[in-house]
Image (cartoon, rainbow, N blue to C red; front, side, top):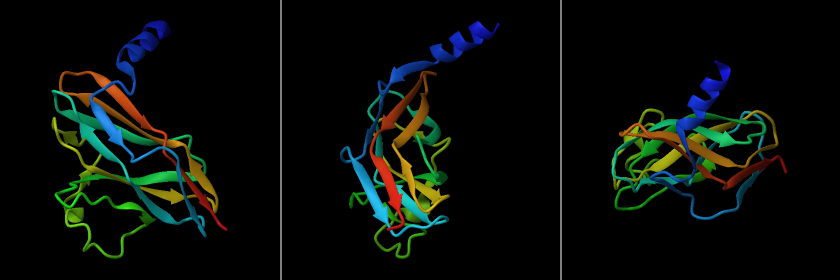
Length: 163
């Protein structure tokens, strides 16, 4: 019984980054922020997920890869619009919303549907649980309208230090 359950779970995933969701993080590498303290909140919103497939897709979850001393407290999708504005790597909550005309129309990422040819700014906010924190990247699990399950990883890392 246990073996058949494990096989069923493995059969639901189609592998590493081979689905229709492209996650543009601008580059590879790592963003660093210093003078941080436990309890600080940051937007790590440089991601642009884009559905290049034939079917709508629905986000199942957004998670950090190998997080240390940080946790996600919010994930949402915001229209990028003609101005192509991404929120970026900033302290949260945002102080000035004038630069983000679609901010108040964002939707929760979990359960959100992205139609073919659509892309959004993925806003994810983390809370530091210690003065020093790190994550190796971000993972999005999703399912297409035809029932196929996929995930996509970004290995753009994040570092926070008190100095």
